[in-house]
Image (cartoon, rainbow, N blue to C red; front, side, top):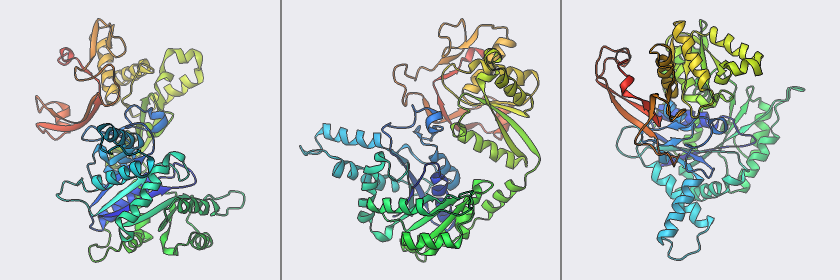
Length: 490
């Protein structure tokens, strides 16, 4: 098994997840089988109870794992199906070590970060890396590991220590470190500054990890002078320094890596010979170029609760992009905070109210995604009503679908007090109810989670036709409430 570790330096949000996904895609295009692991150095057991505004969306896997959004990128780019164990958190590691200590597995030894926590991290990586995720038998050839956070973060220290040990454990020819770092351009002089990256690499080395490949994020192509400086001070050959400059869409990133021979640099470090081919990215190139050429606009109003951070709905926006490219439309997503559509906002903040309604009225389609809690619910109901009455295409996902049911029950069926028991436990006309399999005392991992099979009672309905008139479909779920069946025939 070969391992490619992707770390980040200087600042967060550089695109480590997209870089790791693109590396995996590039290696797969060379004929190798790939898998991926994301390390998140937070004490939460998983991402299930974290605020989307703080952490981005919670991505749901087939097995019901609630994980970091980067695993969604891995699945989309590499065409794999990951498990909850492909997302390592500090909470999971500490929990497993404490459980072992309680069972007496350590035979009375003093349990410490080194070696017990670091050994648990290494064992977890090695175990999960051998789980097939591409539908074939046997382990993958390469495991791409992304270390979340930034080098220097105190919470990352145990993982950096463990990965240093792990590189020695698996051998130098089986471990490649790709460090993603920022090379800022000062607008005053237009010069690319390499000092932050130099310090980042120095800090990484001081903690026992040496990068073999440097991926430099910048607004423009790295010039030869900057590349020469990085080569000299970071002790890396020039061909191992790659520029990841700003591009129109992220589908160009694998092409950037290919054009700069990143795969050859990785193969050289990992001593991979005779088992690869030239990367075949024709389909990817066509997709990236097609997206750049789109000009006919389509506007989708996304009415949600967490609209201040676009990553809160990352999978939704990616699906919209895929659909728009398929329809040959240039997508514009208009982000509308649901509360801004409510009458209360018209009094408190009339400018925000007018702006929200202007976006809604100019939309070609309305999408209301999932969410929790009652804040913004009335605004979502207003959006659903506006879309229905004005015959604007409406897509409700999770809570968005429940909102459509509530609005229809109130406006069309005459059930004026129709509601979900999530928002009004004592409603006389419950349209959406709590599912028996859920828990009202524990929030984490107690919903209907993961891939579930749904059977169509008739192939004549619109949803069945959209799925190609199949008798059943498998889709991923994440919800505690469902539509009361008494209203399904209304």
